[in-house]
Length: 189
Image (cartoon, rainbow, N blue to C red; front, side):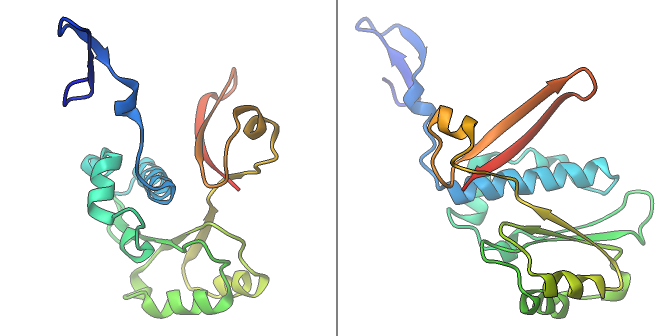
């Protein structure tokens, strides 16, 4: 194998890319946040928010260079304005791996600058959100959407079939006559 990951035969002829070059030696956590953030950016762009293609097209390697192997969720925040309505502003906050309790919601509210100009808040959570936290969210003066990172039980038949381990992220593709093709990502737990 040469330095570019290409397999070579005895005579030095190129045999193509070696599978070892496709091995991801980064953390599952960084990969999970990369996929979640990219999906959020695509969703915001589809909703008409000004999201640069360069942000969406960021590679996993570029993401890890910028945010590291264990990304700080504070740095993953996304703030954007709608392309056609500059008063329509959205803020996306990633809440980390712990259960979201009312004190977390209060902390988020105190950290938000210019609350009066915010139209929408999107919370991306990995774990459960307590009932008091859900009630606290209802008191916000702007619309709040909560997205829980999709999960797949390690005991799920598909997870068992492929031998998936806890923490792995899998791409799930659905196809039907009605929705054509739909792609989601799930974290095994």
